[in-house]
Length: 266
Image (cartoon, rainbow, N blue to C red; front, side):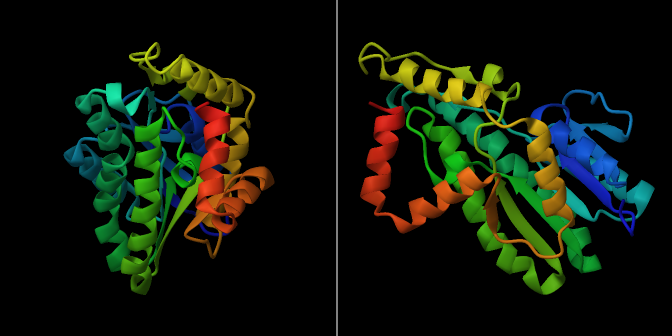
């Protein structure tokens, strides 16, 4: 249990990794508020309706927490979804929506809590990114782009707010067995032109996800990251993914890209 009661706001906490993070924080004794479009099935947390793409809704959610609790110690950004398909065939509106939710949704949530954290000179912001942000996956290009953008955003923001006692970190999960897989918006457009490679690639990814890490493991990791005294700019969950990300930094980019091709694009 926590020595000092922490107040946390979690976006996208109604399912998957977000819900696991909510439960883990509640178990640790934190006061937890969750904001998403759907109500949350967890009695230990307070649900605040809101969509991360709505800047005003995020301001209202943060305002409600501050009015009731007087502080927000932790912000955890979990809201997101995935699309798949060939870049050539993806509608521009779909690509923009992917970035609107996964990237700008985080921006909206951070902007809502950061003035309070900066003035209070304390706070922890945890952004759920993905290993795909460090190792972009073909035929899931726009999802990878959204997560790579988050990694860059976190790294830069971290230094902007460093003097004010606010720390920002990205957590990069790999394959997780959640409803995210079934919720992925798949476009088979162009599969014939691409020799069936789109469906093969997405099928391989979905098989890996269904056999992946349990969301509870990710939730526990996020909780520890939220409560740890010191955190890196980004970290992966599990030794295998930590090793994989490290290798991509050490090996020639051409070799890494070729390996990804044989795994997900051949």
